Amino acid sequence: MTYLQMFKTLGAMILAGVLIMALFGCEQKPQPKEITVKRVEAEDAPVRFEIKSAGKFHAGYNGNVREILIIKDKETGKEYLGITGVGITEFHTERHGKTTVTREE
Image (cartoon, rainbow, N blue to C red):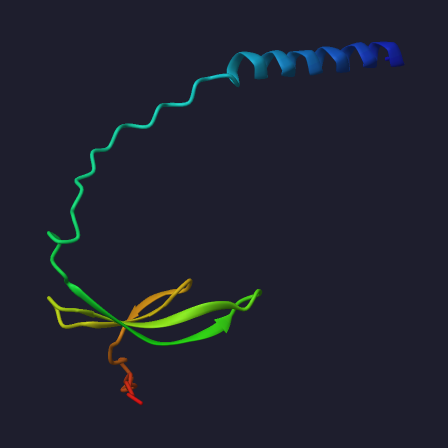
């Protein structure tokens, strides 16, 4: 096979790939379905959670301010520990006898 034949074969393969992409790659994306959201005014919404700030600290690559939050569910009585930008976890007793101790200063 000569260089000219290889060049023609390579050109034909590239052209076939471009044509396939042009034919099959231009499909329209499905349109998102409309969702109806009921608006609840603050006066109408029951206050289920009580949130208290337990302090702030700097963390992360840029020294961003994080806040420690104690969140109490008034319906279940459960308490949660939250750190902004990180997550929330429930205060609970561990299986191996370790307990979570809350200190107030």
